[in-house]
Amino acid sequence: MNALLIVDVQNDFCPGGALPVPEGDQVVPVINELSAKFDHVIQTQDWHPAGHRSFASSHDGKEPMDEIEMDYGMQTLWPDHCVQGTAGADFHPDLTTTRTEMVIRKGFRPEIDSYSAFFENDNETPTGLTGYLRERDIDTLFIVGLAADFCVKWSALDGSKQGFGVYVVEDATRGIDANGSLAAAWDEMNAAGVQIISSDAAKTLA
Ligand code: VGL
Ligand code: ZN
Image 1 (cartoon, rainbow, N blue to C red):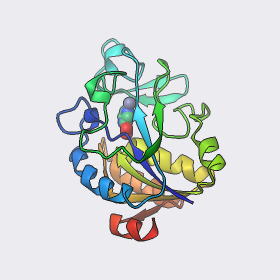
Image 2: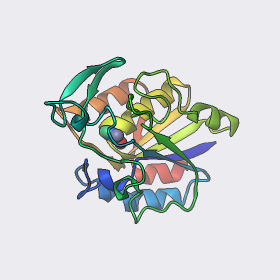
Image 3: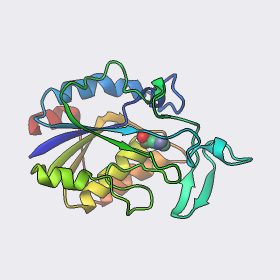
Image 4: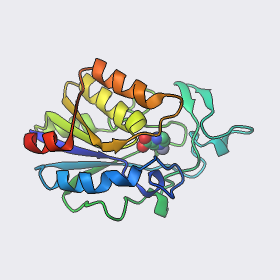
């Protein structure tokens, strides 16, 4: 059984937000058309407490996009974004969310970031999504949303590792593209067996 997984389509990742993905808002109409076709729709929501360790503002002398060593490995530092309860953390106002059956919130532990819908950035703390999907007999995910080179990529790679069939819908995602991260992300997803398809193709498979 298939599900559409809508990753982090939140105000802060759209133009005018705190961590804007170029053209991030342009995925919204494409995703709305797709979500009407899928029997099951799941969303993720980046959901950080104020003062989160992934924020550059939590580290003296650091700027957004700097990298630091955390207990679990290298971590890119970000502008403050998607703070719990703020308008920036809300879903884009034009995103259709009525058919969403489940929202996975991630990044709520103060000391650890979480890109993937499946695991936090330590690669071992689960969000619970694997169990939810298995229990509901969902074996194939169509992933859309923001950002292609961070949360979409890690969700796709982890989904594939967990044994799910994974498609990423190319025209329903956009990337941050920090230091070539977008081209690298497409290569990594391809190499992991993630299928990259168009939204027209995804509609026929839904
Ligand atoms: C994301 C950076 C920080 C994403 C979330 O949704 O791709 N990127 N937090
Ligand atoms: Zn975040």
